[in-house]
Length: 304
Image (cartoon, rainbow, N blue to C red; front, side, top):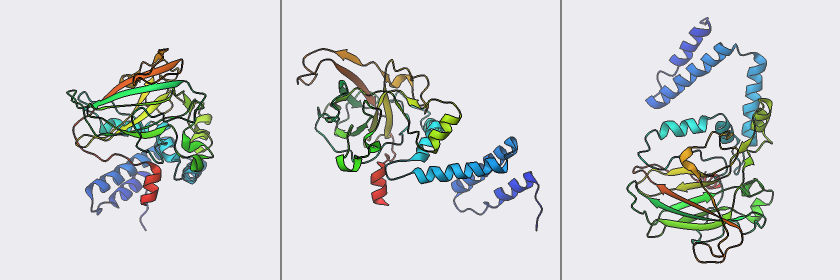
């Protein structure tokens, strides 16, 4: 039996992947071994620490359901999600900036008519009108483009976090199809900053290292135009106190929008407005290319 010291062991494990048929898989596995082994050596990892890590990852998996993804949340708070996003979107060429998908892209995004209220059951939040446009890099409108939107309510929770979700169904999420001018618009509530879920292993970690658990207020958008790279992004609310310390590191300056507080009796589509109400205006510029837009988690589970 061969006798390995710590560096010879690493070389042997790397060598064990030499016959991997797929060169990309071979590269990924060998680099993963290098990084993991370097971490163990640099930190002099103890048995107790190794055991805790195994338990932590086990509990992270056990916390996952068809409507909750604790591993995505872990990736988010460690900055890995934003790093993967960054290395895959280095050259934007004037296209709208991307950010994390987040762990709440779940359930049905039902196609609704423009102007629909996506938060009709939320009676306590201040109302907001969102108007937007999807174009190419030169400003040409893109018609017939599906746009998924979702956001937290003014209590800081997404619909899928609520106990009655399977009974009441989706809220504050929908799909709109751009018109001939590339436009879409809808009504909702003004979202607020909110904490990530802290009742699982990720919340335990955040508390132990004394980090706050807050995300600044935002609306998620997923724009999937044929012939263009799928766009996964947020639009953040200007002035939110957590813009500079987002727990998942997802804020980019270009994605911060000024939200106008209005008292007009009519909203931009000519229908009556409550007082006061808020106006979000934000346009999306799409980069030519290809790619597969992510599916909501429940749709992925149904396909499995």
